[in-house]
Length: 149
Image (tube, rainbow, N blue to C red; front, side, top):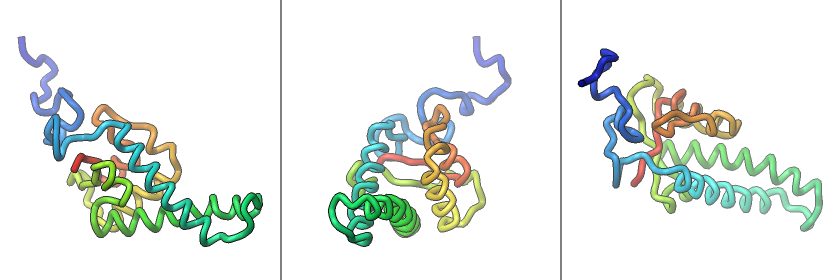
């Protein structure tokens, strides 16, 4: 029968990323949630180790633990903004095989986009609300998408 909505065929959802011109499989395609969570977990653990070392204190000290938690978020933000701006990926994302790329739908300079994306990611909620292309609100606001290496 054909398309009765009047929308161009390319604008219809067929698979994650097709509306953005991305391939369905392989390099450049939209990775699954598991791959992205693995990258995030690896990055968070690395930042937590750095924050714990910076916070010092005796092991098991609740005050040092609380300081390390907040410091880890700050280290994560700085680490993510710096590495995403310079390389488009972080150590954890690289191990998981993903990178962040611009979609061209926002006229933000790359460093600003990475700062906005990271700060929204640190709030958590924007990252867990995502569309059919698996773009979280943090990616949509920054004009970015996560893709496979």
